[in-house]
Image 1 (tube, one colour):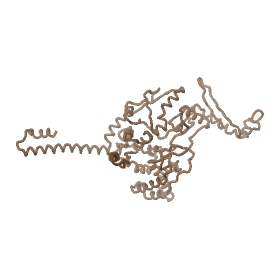
Image 2 (tube, rainbow, N blue to C red):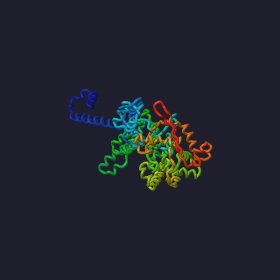
Image 3 (cartoon, rainbow, N blue to C red):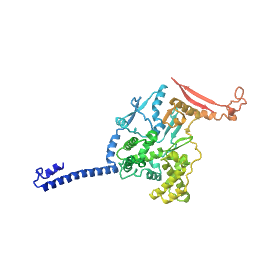
Length: 496
């Protein structure tokens, strides 16, 4: 190319000059021009890569166009080509991985698939290429049972407590999380930014993997962002990253998910903060099970109600008592944000180590200006006090337990589940035939039959009736069916 340009500028330059010195000069100029073109190309490429890493402009255009076609539609009848997730804590807990055996079991009992999802070709190819299916994922889900009128009989949503949306999260919690995990996530100067990739951390992690071949100590650390961590503890096998391939899968899926609504990821990045705080696993409690999300963990581990914590962390502390309370709650929240690194260790026996880690981050947060010195000192003076026992956390049952317990036990049997714990955490809505008003009226009557005066007022005492029997020692039971055209419908089920 250089020679062609030179010939165009200097016609006749193809003829070899008679002066040897001139020939050497021209050869040197040609070599310098070649190197100039190469270096210019490298500089342009480097500038482009730096600009792309900062703005994600090219990624935003390509991925937003691609993901715009990743859709699904619920259509009548079964879909013979449908695929289900095979692993992932989120998919396992909500029952998505067990849909094939669920469908087979129910089909054997004469149920039929009325409607099922159909993926678009783009979404199908995306999953074929290694991504996880993209859709609006629920932060809370659980068993819900409805009666004949579609009124709620039973509701068991998990986690029990969660942030409603990004706007409901105290800014102090948001800023602390970003300082710990992802400094540039909410960068407003680059609205197209890809939240799944932090290039500086990514290159550092790649360098660590390469140098780790010589010294394994360099392999410590990773390139995880909040977006990829959500993919990990929702969809990766065991909630872990077993290798480089799974790490790229998390980044691949999180990048596509961020651009589903267009090239501007501002809204998606705010949602990532809320999803992370509502979804991060934070240990388990015997008798309760998994603790999911910061609001639920705050209540279960420390006994602090999230609405109270939100109010205290948002309002300015005026008095010493208010500052002390704010420091105590902030210390609890910060410890949970840090415990997500090793929840089983920090929250089930590693309290001393968690306290020390929290102290170190309180000083770092104050030095960075995230919190003021007064809040730092107040939080340092507070103590992390764990609950001594599990609080009552039963799901809401809106009619007599006999009806809902019967429906739940029937579902456990039909779905071949191990227990009610697994059932209550499924993303499942069941439609029953219970008549709630009749159930409530009968429940009100039967629960009063332990009173002799009430039994006597009903005319149930006398010859061939109760006689002198103490009604409080009797068991009362009512099961009522309504005959239909081709089946019988259970309307009332109650026993004392």
